[in-house]
Length: 336
Image (cartoon, rainbow, N blue to C red; front, side, top):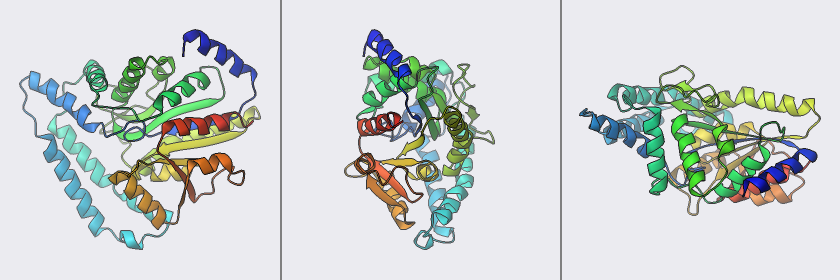
């Protein structure tokens, strides 16, 4: 979309009365096709290798984490089979914080991200995007265009944020910018996108990596409950803003794995990203939702049915394409 066309459309949008939509997006496996932590950690290994510093192998850190996660799951009471409510499942997922913090401490002690600068992260992100190591999920171009059109500064229509337990906010923004540039999409809005995430280097002075969290900080995002905590104030502010000008209001969260459990149920419309066949993390989330009595419907049902204007607490939706998510959000924007 050319800058001229975008400018004309933005002017038109200002003249139309629209709803206010807050859209929260997970990162790994939601906006991307795959996990990005290996690409991120690889930057640290390359930087330190150039400096002649030998680090503990990454697979050892991962293996230790997985072993502790398995041990915690097997010893936790009540067991998975006995957890039949969203409340009991949330307690279990929140209890994982000790495992996640221990893993983070191991990463810090290993020195993987010592000597890594923001420039290193940006170069690594560019390389990963250009070489296809990190791929954006199908339909992300439409979502990106929607964000560029409706979340322009000064408009009270679409607010978009990324909320992630992953690292790092700087790396995520760089990946998005380079992916947009690669496909000649508008990057202006991405530069100002709020990212609630952890950081492995000094907080970037861009004003938009919202509440940057050092990996070892008390407010680091480790669990699904931490995600909900990060969203609490923005949700309240967004709802208040819409109420103040008489706009209809909707909140939407899009995620794909268990760390997204709480946010999916916290908003008006929770949307699970599911591949065909589902990946292991997607399947684990699907089985967990079913076990605790949360119904999952195709996102197309939410667009068609007027009986489901806002989801009851125990309904989520699923989609395998971000273009469908973008269409859904656009539909809600023009509801007012």
